Amino acid sequence: MRPQEPFSSSRLMCLRGTLLAAKRKAGAWSTWRPRARGQRGRWDEKDLAAPTGPATACGRKRAPRGTARSPPSAGPLPRSLPRAPVAARTRLPLIRASLRSSPGLGRSKEAVAPAPIGELVPSSFLAAVVDALDLGSPVVISPSLSGMYSLPFLTAPGSQLRGYVPVAPICTDKINAADYASVKTSTLIVYGDQDPMGLTSFEHLKQLPNHRVLVMEGAGHPCYLDKPEEWHTGLLDFLQGLA
Image 1 (cartoon, rainbow, N blue to C red):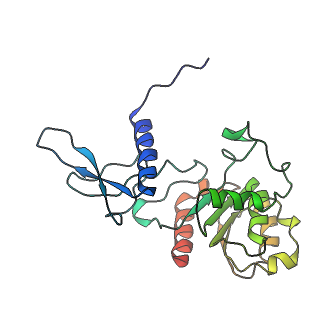
Image 2 (cartoon, rainbow, N blue to C red):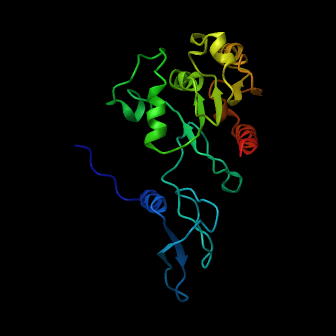
């Protein structure tokens, strides 16, 4: 049996962020209350109609004492998509697909995949995820293998997507021209110029009527890791245009 890992400070902050995120959804917010000099501050719950500051990600530095802030989010982003600066984030709901969370892979190996790798997954799969998480009209960021999940959801009749960010996804050749042409969702097509798969996927994705393109020079397949600053700048500019 694998020994239990000790509770590090970062892990405790993530656990606290998970609990506070649940309280936030229920309408209970927390503010930081300072104590006398030389003593630790504490978190006090207080019902507020709206947050008093920008959302703070789990594991970030605390705000100065005496400053009210909204509670941390439920946890860190997947490592495949680098974290953006706090001040520049938007409040649009995002779905970030990655190999670490896809059914049958990464941390979800025990889950049964809804389709074999390389085959399109019914759009009802992501629709159920969006409904279960109460995301409304989210933005989907879809790199590589996750294209088998995101593309059917994008092209489904009456798609509820606010925006779509494909990063050299697979299965772009399995969508016909008529389905691409019917999509009205704003799209940011991203790929590295050193990635043959990115160029291949772009040849199909460029059939989307409402799209723009971000090509990262000198970047490979995981272009968001090769050029993180360029990735964040382009992504945040796109998201702010949707807000």
